[in-house]
Image (cartoon, rainbow, N blue to C red):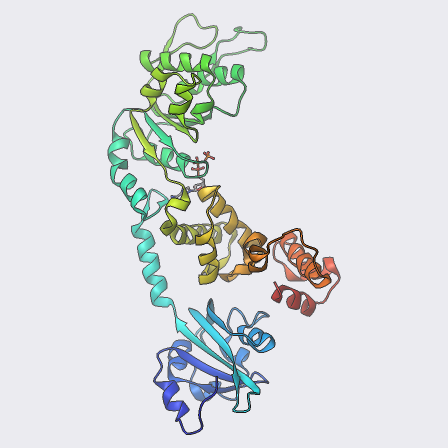
Length: 438
Ligand SMILES: Nc1ncnc2c1ncn2[C@@H]1O[C@H](COP(=O)(O)OP(=O)(O)OP(=O)(O)O)[C@@H](O)[C@H]1O
């Protein structure tokens, strides 16, 4: 970028709504427009002539300076989300773009950075998120909104509910919401994973046994049906329930009483069933592996939870939801996710659905403890060079090996740079340089 000499640069810069400042090759601020003052709270005369990092105190100033990257690689950067600290200590989220600055001879004489205040957008985003949150379930896609609309009525009814959807689509979360919105909310919610136990253990887990029913039965053990009395029993992975237990379950649902192993008389039970599966139950019925009568008994109301790839508009909301949750759990101050990292996630097809998104963000929290989650904080498979590499087994250069070692050491040390340096026996500057190459 170069200005013709006859243009009044300062007047032009002051007319721009975005903050703009320029630095020379020594990082001394050479111009600072009016919007820059409005956004940062720093007067022009206090900025010009000072080193940029002393004035701006941004989340990138500790080593991943955007301007430095532009000058070193002769490239430009656009729309990177970061925050700066104003003189009164408040944090302002901004989106920055940076580029090298050249004179008429084409020589690099410094850099220019423009930035936009994202505070208003953040407030709007938070308001939107509140609007699109229902019982801790986040989403604004049409598919989810439809479920939100009927959820209270389904919850109020005494009928069984079948939740279907791929793994990680939120079936357990919806089961909990259904219980919390139901007249049984004061009663217990008991969860059984039908795929997790061998048949004989699952049977005694579900229906319980009496002392002496078999050699190891020293005393009575109430089954989960009894424990859920007056509340809800959530039968997860119902498609994995063995046929013999399907028969027993059907009988319990029809007769509203359970018969613990070794019992002389059945015990009345008042339980509402919510079942979930990631398998195609109708297909299992056709194959004779799931009883048709039980299927109809469970499938009174069915809620199909769509996979995340069918509701990409929920990804930004969910990402911010998990960021807020991890901030609370880990005592961190991550402000959000940068536009390019978010765009990369939106392009991903999430075979593991929302659980996968949650895990990706949890990983990012290892590398990022404040500011915005950037592309380099996402797991390696999302990094540009690997995404575009046709052969992931291609030999690496020595420099690439070092970069990878640096990233892995940082991840192993929960993002603590000094610990990673000690482990690799390198200086902090070397670590910074390697991480910048990522
Ligand atoms: N719409 C949503 N809003 C917020 N969090 C969600 C949403 N959907 C799922 N989650 C979160 O994603 C994770 C996985 O959800 P959950 O365990 O309910 O999925 P599932 O369908 O029961 O998975 P599986 O079939 O593997 O048991 C949980 O941490 C859950 O809280």
